[in-house]
Amino acid sequence: MIKKFIKDHPLHKKIAPVFDALFLLRPTLFFPVWIMITAGMTASRMNISRYQVWLHDFDLSTLSLFIGITFISGGSFIINQIMDVDSDALNKKLFLVGKYIPVPAARKIMYLTLISGSIFLLISGIYNFLTGALLFLFWGYFYNIEPFHWKQKPILGMIANSAAGFLLYASGWLHVVASEGFSLNEFAFGKMLIISIPYLLCYTAVSLLTTIPDIKGDEPTGSITFPVKFGSFATIFISMIMVLAAFVLGWTYDDPVSTTAAAISLPFYIFTLIRRENKDVLRAIRYSILILAVLLFTVYPLLFPAVLIVFYLSKYYYWHRFNLHYPTFQVDDNISTSPAEKA
Image (spheres, rainbow, N blue to C red):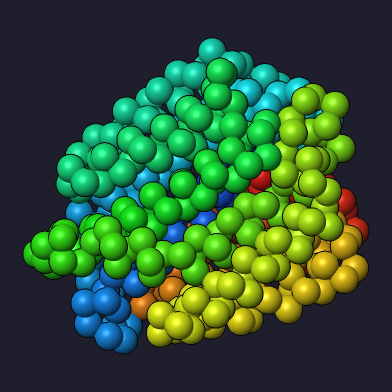
């Protein structure tokens, strides 16, 4: 009875639009954001003291970091939607800008989000604020805005996403180093850069795959993404090699998290390369994120309830707003990404 009420009652059609402004920030993309921050925190802690798990102490500074980076990322995602109105229409996206939220209103929400994120990052520490500023520079400005517009350039678009992944990872690493009172010269930069490589390879591999299902919409609008330029086979192959390299480097660095995540994810990339269907691409994207998240839950279990809340709130919203069953780990023959899956 409760399930039927939640799924079918017409009352929810009136409630769902209340969340339009929230979903303008594309909360389902918070999953990889939070995962990369937590990956940086986990790697940093393991560098300081090996095999720490189940760290559940509540910390306002850490909460401020996650809120701040989330808002900065959300503001960048709004810019992406404003700039992608034409290609999203061709790709049959259900984005909110234009149809449900006017562009001027979306801009106001973007500015409010970015200002709020900056305040939270200042509360959590000056290094976090600087990391957030760089994150917006690459992911918000260089990636979306003319004359740069890196998302329409195959190599620069990949570089922008990789840089964003590194900055997310770095924010987690530096936060732990600072909170533990260690010198940044001792535990940052050099070690952080080296140990981040397996995670960045996995992150970049997923980022490349997210561009494949939207080739048909990107080509007519002049978006020369990586698969538009080099083809889907080359994109999948390079992504698979990245995950394989992540496994080898993770093993070399004696990092159990990146090694295990890459080893479990690799078969999905191999199968995708063999069959090359879009449902296999989506499966590789979603399962790769899930696998790394589950491993990180064992270190920072407080990440789990945050992910769970966003997951089910998103399912509620997309079902009652657009009659769309998303997010889900079930992959059917639908050849396009979800309305919130592509950065």
